[in-house]
Image (tube, rainbow, N blue to C red):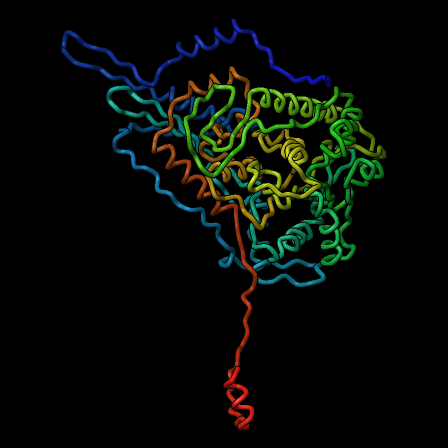
Length: 519
């Protein structure tokens, strides 16, 4: 029969056991002493323990500069579990931009509608660093038997690095994006540097079927004012030099390009990337999901079982799939790391897209790459499950360190979608991470983390403290704030038709009347 192979992570059992045992020797947030002489019970509280853990979750694994970690605002309080209210279930309301002023842009063939010009104003404000967001993480420690809860909060205000334009279908998200590119084109061109792989182009990542449509829209609204390169496969990539890509204004690429190929054995892009980087072979994207999200919750969560968290309805992920996903991502990341260490000439052609730093990144129809529910997935023949998994790796969906993602942006990362995936807190958290790496409360515990966890890591995750109702309220509030500040959904102009009613009386003949009554 046909041979199959799969990958299993190895780790030292003794080292793992030593680490686990040391977890029990960590300082505790509460210390209880009995004073027998005075007949009193003394409870000591150590807020430094809780504060350290909160700060660790907020900072760890995000590739942040030291100034960020050294300038956190720390708070703590003592609460009672019985006094915590259950978070109210609130739908996410995506605001429009009606209250904003209209931006103006030179160079468009057709003028923007008022709603489009206002949407552009909001996007420009974010790109200019004028919209701040308060990132926060919490650590909770309960004193058993009494119900006291020590809550520490680590906070840092940081500018948003992108957002979501979720205008209704047909409302002109493409032209707003083109206007955004035009409004900053002189600065982008000035900052480009072929010697350093710094492109002045906006990288547009689209589902395969929209590559040509995007270029057509660019021509319609700007003619040839913007230099555009379309890369739909490796063959097209090899036509362009580093200098040409860096001097472009727009580069359009299909989201599933790294899994390009009619069969799993032939994957031209990853083979080309490995060769250019001098790296090992990158395996095919996993054939099965290691984790899936679903809108409903049922069953019992046995976290470190091979079948994974059954709390997500329809989640049939297995540990073997997690191992495959982890190895796939590791090989891809290693190839990119080696590629970026190379000194590449400006004249060299066919350099993989992961080598460059882009002015901004725009992910059109961003929901297409993110969804894992079979009910939400597109049935497009050119963007099936394997290509979609490759797209998530290409975009760095599960990577919390924006500086090590496959695609790097200087100014911002934007998601465009007529179907905003804002129905759950988990989805909002994921979008915030993708659109520039904004941290929402609870991000460190997002379900995407478990897509590639080892059995050991799943077990260690289980050792983390529970999440109280107060924590869930904070996570919910963080998500609602992000939607309010970084997302917008504008509708098309109302159709205004003036109807005039006229009545005209006509007398029928006798025969016409009889014919009318007989029918």
